[in-house]
Length: 503
Image 1 (cartoon, helix red, strand yellow):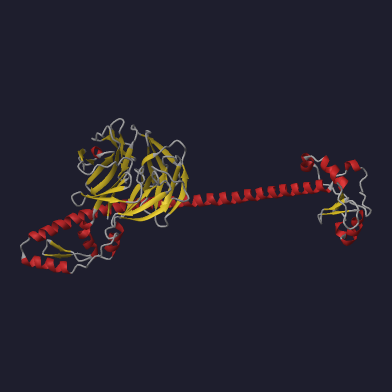
Image 2 (tube, rainbow, N blue to C red):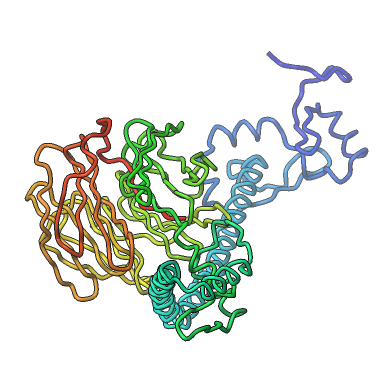
């Protein structure tokens, strides 16, 4: 079937690529006059058919582009028609070459962009390492000083309490009057969550520099800093332990171990190593059913402060977490994530990927930051790894126990439980010394441990597990273990988060 030109009743013989229209032999002459710039844009249909019938992809890709010109009478300036190359071939080749050229240019620009990015990433990393190198000794020294201040404050508290007792027992009316008078002069201290922090005490001490000594033996406290020390007894300590599926038992160790049961709209299964306390707040990350969630709970208000999404990193359950004492909580591995250290900024509430670990590590039962390094105990492996936060190097430490559960004192000591071999040890990351502890974990239930410091001279390990027979309290100083809270409501606390908190 031949389609004829409507204007001249002749068969279409030509195509103009520029106008994308069919033309007869007469249309070509008119078209050439009306569009002189199209003289090389039209072609005979027979040439196109012949070209398409012999078209090969390799010809388009490999053959150089050639051009042909037309005479005004519609004939080609081509000495050999069999070697004619249609403009379709040339256009296909031109478009292919253009695409290939653009792709090559794009790839080259991407390579340059990545080189620039890598250069500044390396520069940024170098600056971070140098910053940490300069800060490391300072940070360690500050930690030493704060430990000294904490101990001195505690000792001063004891002395002040002794003096108060002496004042009460003293029958001298003049001294009693002086004491009462001085008590009336003490300022009222607001009850805030930072009142008893080391930072607050140091700020107060800088504005307070003297004591009054009356009658040789009586110290009259006049300044805010000393008022803080005396009233530090109002600080409460709790054990916060969760159970399946969404319950919490709050145990007040400052009030004869009084118990309060709470309920939260959050599942705590498989969060045993995923909890950390900072001030009055408790942070828990992930867990079965909440792999991509995190929660902030206030022990003071006994309520949920925030539930957020884990964004920017991979969520998981059984994520081991630890706090650096400043702005970040570090997240190590998980049940399904075996090679990562990420971190969470408690001020911005943002997550970021921090470092990719080798694949030889599994889940971690406990992690601790101590003197510029992150230490982490591997689940069911005879292994603790040390990650230097300054230069990001890793050192493995072998231990003769296969951990099921663990905790730490934030001072270089891990307490590790091996239920299979019925062992409980204390391991010091500095001395590499292992000490066997007098605990015999329950044979039939899963037992999970947590550390709690009651005073500078009194620390305990508490255990919670599948049922109440797993509950015990171990004194670190006396190396004695006793049953603990066996008569409370029986709840399954295996693999659920527990922590110590004071405010």
